[in-house]
Image (tube, rainbow, N blue to C red; front, side, top):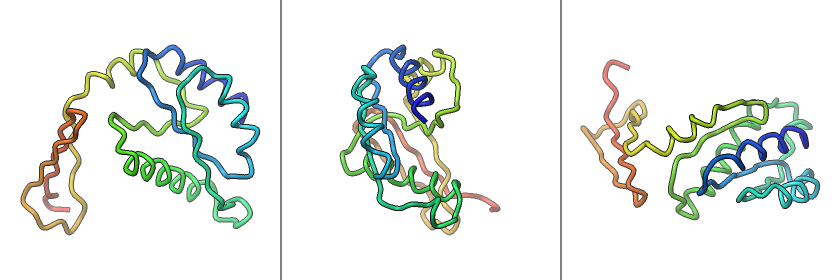
Length: 138
């Protein structure tokens, strides 16, 4: 885990600011990770949760979903602006990818099944435009 975090930190240091790295993990692993994150030179928020998905035998997929929900809850609670990218420690990105992310000004998300409105538009303070259309034939 330390090697993956270090590699991710080295990559994120190359991305021009502003970048905020949200790191999610079980609370039992937090002290070691906190020490590592302090030395990365990357702006970060270290979020933890008490659940132990490994001991419960529910698998890593449920834990990944939980981590995403923790991150999105933090983004919503603190009204953070920008693009959220869920990246694993083993993922590799070309730095041009981050340049392309900065060019995004409009995002489109299809509505969930059963959504009744004909069209909903939400203007976010970060100048992103989120347009939600109802699904057709789903």
